[in-house]
Amino acid sequence: GNAPGYLAAAIAFKQAATQRLPRWQQSTAGSPGVLLYHHDANYLLARFSIPSLGYIEPLPGIPPSAGHLLKLVQELRGRKGVILHTVYQGNGGIAQLSGQLGWKAVALPLDPPSNSGQDGYFALIDQWTAAVAASPAHLFKPERAVRASGGTSTRVDAGRNRPNGAIAYVW
Image (cartoon, rainbow, N blue to C red; front, top):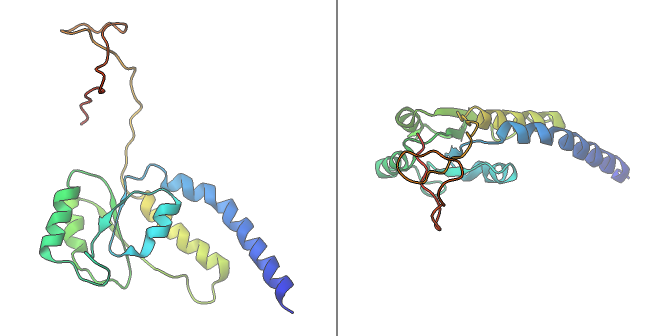
């Protein structure tokens, strides 16, 4: 029958996907997160450890209310991220959120083109990971930590950290 051909195709697909994984992981590493319209990409986010910042739909299939959009803006203002939605999902607050948060909104296909084979699937994953990578993130190289003994002393060997940690001011 067809079993040997199917097995060979499965092995070839696994090898091709394994070769692409490092590139996908590298492009999504350090992403500040994604706001999804729907739960479409949960598996992708989980696979690449991309933070999910929430959903524009309050419940699957329910359009967002003005109150829900306001709540998202209040929760996410000042953060970095990207809004991802599929090409068939209506605007439903996407433009409003994009403008108020200053985030890029990207419309993506949910499925590869018909009869495109594994190349179409890989191109789809390329599109989604590239959209995640487009979210702005800037990582600073940390400076040497200095403990102070009080006042204006900056001796490296002075003082002790409080038992419950330290206060860090980030801007």
